[in-house]
Image (tube, rainbow, N blue to C red; front, side):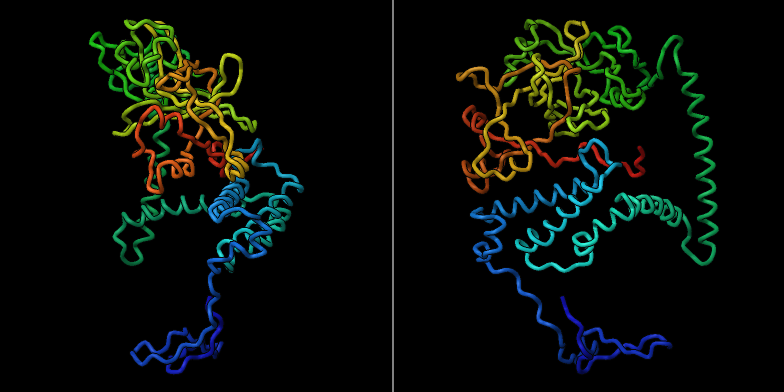
Length: 459
């Protein structure tokens, strides 16, 4: 950063206001070509390439490599961000004084010790306030969201839209924006009554909940096998991917989500190929059985940090906007043990009989590497689980939707992949062989914000 410098020779001083009488210099000399000598303080040099052997570095990281030190820097930053935003906690509106002191101490340690040791001296106003004044802010306000400007920014976007619809000329702009705002308010006032009338007219007799119209086909939210959308005799798809979204939005949080029996129909023999060759055994269905398969499923997620349940949507499809999408889920097996698996099929019915299950490729927890930074921050190392040593593909398991706990964000173990395939290796370029699948390792993302603080939190 440049320090305060005196007037440079040849520069044109800028005169302040009428009441100041002071002169200021921008430090860049004469802009007309006769540039004078610029005076400034010498900027601080970046850290030496050998600073990893410094006493401060060794005190913080010991004998850890520079790669592990940088990884720990990012993990600390992610964990601090989670705490500041109230991510993945039971209550985001209650914070004791002890928790405030812990948060302030963590922010100070991260910014003053870890960040400056790795990145060199950093002097900014925001970092200073976070490192030295966070506790005072917490004790004074009792929360971290009173200074949130995101709501005002979102409201400002409405003003921008109104301005763009004006002619942008003269004093008539404000009048045009006021008329636009009044028209918008009037339209919004008329919409609820209009929608309510349409919804009441479309409500069938005897139906307990609201109905959804799409493509002229009625979707029942009752969840009975006979009340779903019509499935044609030619096995063609007659329902899009929006049914569960509508149900999840309209229904109140209950232990069981009501859903219709809809989707594409496939024979087990047509799906049980390659990685899905054990599908029939997993479902207990013969090769000629007909499955009703959907691209996604909605369920009530249960979080281990005791946060309020939320509706999550897991996908298992080869083509979502022309790209495959297979979510990873945490679930309970028949014995109640917590497991991980990658969703590969969502089954709504077998031979027309209702059966809400998700077929997953099982994952197992494996031991961490020695001194693994990600494991220390709560990430779980996973690998594919096989039924036998001779099996070519991971084990398949049919999991009832009621036993799904929540979605899981899983990433590749890059250090393991690079050590085996080289620094340019990518999961997409790794050979899809049985040997590679057995050697592949993954990590769960412990920093992913599944639940966060609301903009207007309340008890």
